[in-house]
Length: 112
Image (cartoon, rainbow, N blue to C red):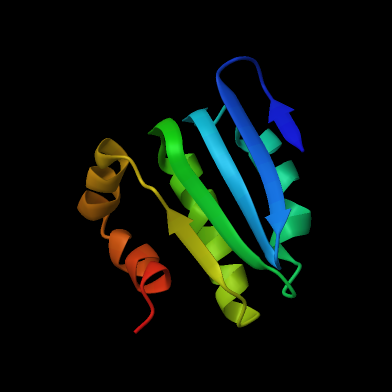
């Protein structure tokens, strides 16, 4: 499944072995947030599959995009369902570190 707001942002989903991975590409900001929410809404509520967001090809994320990721984290946590954020680019990891949210994604990424 793809969603395009233009060439600016793309979300592609892949389901395999009980895991749904959403690959984000481009820029996740206020202008594409409704499209991203539309893609994520049915996936977030499905507690039967593990949900992974892959940020490898994400170039930019603003506070709206971060807010959506935190909303997903909260919803999945409330359902006791798996949620991972993987392959975070260095510039986005730096933003996650600065805002203090990296610890939430890191604890989800590397359960001990």
